[in-house]
Length: 253
Image 1: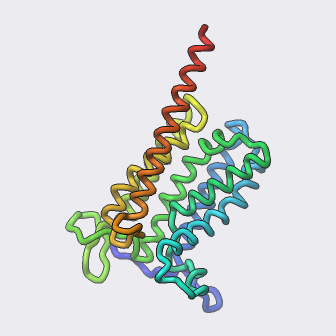
Image 2: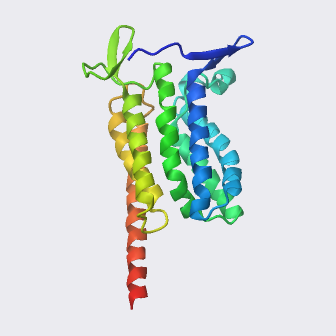
């Protein structure tokens, strides 16, 4: 695959990049899916929209702050460069952490069931990621090392692992799986925790192929975060699963 022009269109001489367009499309479609599904699971769509209107911008700010913090040597003292996100530089882990924390705080303030909403939102998050990753393709970034694998991305005459594509496909399949599994949910929080674990597994292995990873000392930051998230989600999954089973046994007595 050869990446086309990263500029989608221009308005009065200002270039609008495909990176931002695709992330925007992913967010809009994901929010639309969430908005439509909300009433089916007992949620007020307008209240959910209120949460999204605040938490999504917070998540974007968090994604940029996270990326800049772990790549500070490239941004120190240059506020214009820090604010310029058209060329890339949004870390998904930062976006998820900031956005989810904001959503949780809003849910507590507005008396919305947090675990249930996280379950409802999980498929939409995966869907948004599957679309947004294509922005990396247009920017010729977030690719892996040199490869002879038939599915690759061509940059400057050389073929590289299309890691953005691997993640995009995984997240879309994860979106479909979570939608399917929602009807078989045993306890609140199960769908979101499955998302956290399954995405972390994929990110850990795909990150190992990338050449532009943010680092913590000798370690790839995204791999460390993925391990922490997977371990935390698995522990919480086991606790909630056992609690659900215990409550079921008590109800049978």
